Image 1 (tube, rainbow, N blue to C red):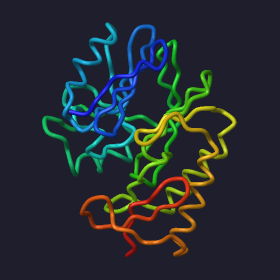
Image 2: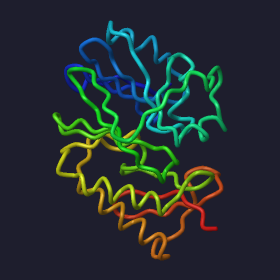
Image 3: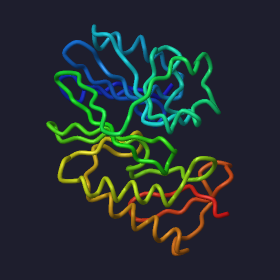
Length: 233
């Protein structure tokens, strides 16, 4: 099993599992876990070894590589626009009655940390990012990364993805570091216009079609900053 835990700083850990990350932030009286990975790791037990505080769960979005151990947490917080996506592929042992809403502009106040919820649809309908203004850091989910960005299948929308990137780019004076779920970390805001340009080049037919890394109903379109996995209708 390919996994490891990194202590980034006091009160902040990364749990990495086969190329996908969960983030744990310890506050004054409670801790927040962001995503639960593929489900091959006992994430609840692992977080209990890192913090004595009660842990609540937030999903940046609900693709299966982010919800694999959601069953071990209750409640589960996500944006309401993501709930149908979650319900359609409900992870084993999970129930919709455990789901609670997070809205645009909500503040997840842990005392030491204060994260603002930002709705960024495109990768999925209810994808969110979390902005910590005091420490100038952004948790970006799958939307901002230098790896392979899945943009094919139900719920993906390239136009919404572009608008979300423009929205975050306009806020870039509020953060210095970007912490994605995949690829390298931390990143900086200079990557955002490069991904936007890649999206424009994709839709204009300027990127070369390649075979995806494993069999799937899409093609790979690489550019200087990342790659899209995309299917033209």
